Image (tube, rainbow, N blue to C red; front, side, top):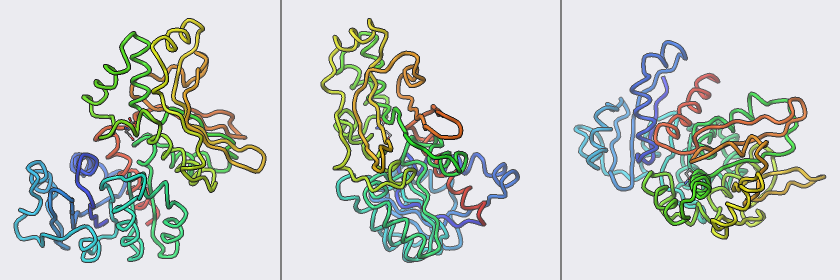
Length: 340
Ligand code: HSE
């Protein structure tokens, strides 16, 4: 039985909670996975802790009204760090606010969990991108798992794919569409829509970041490129090492000219081994229509791994969304469960 504590209970945390409820029986039957939620702490919705277990359905109901602290009979009023200290959870699910510049407060949550030997599963890009090595070392020193599938391309399996299914390959390049908002904008510009209208629609549909600068200037894709470089390629690439350009300089005319030439603009994130070094970039590229990445439209993401044993392997799937990102946490919980 895995005892779970949620740090952050917004869209992604609730996405996982809904999956856990919906799939409870099948996860038990097919995967031997049983869970109990013992704590939830959210910056705006409050907290509830009961080391004997909380009712997840009740938590979701309270979260909808922003009042987790109204949970009857639970210890309430604890902040995230107090929750991590007091909970008997085996796994901390860290899905609080992401800050790509300082990584706080999530980085302190990561450390508090791992120092206590609790496994950590997260979708939080800030600390994973900035402090990957330190966090991995801390996890190892405390015999805890650090799993972060959802930091890159939501629940579409790229981290687990590289770690498990492509094991034994030498991966010389990872290249792909790592941001849904910009791909959605470029796809719509090809249909004649203005940049401004397409961005507005992406915001309305909910996959653009709160500040869409992170999307359109390539910072969101950059964080994912750094995570891939550090985790899959074992490279010491930091945000300032990534050659970054966003899509704001691409006009409707540029998109039309490319289409006339049989090409398509894509914001491409890339990590490549060159000699002994690893280079990383996020840049708009004109991609030939024969490239599998060219056919990936709208908010969908895709990544091509260049491997020595299989050649190029491309995975295409959602890179954002409530259930889609919530699922990334489930696959990490199952991986921990499999290791026993
Ligand atoms: N804003 C991001 C995107 C969400 O558009 O891909 C997932 O990181």
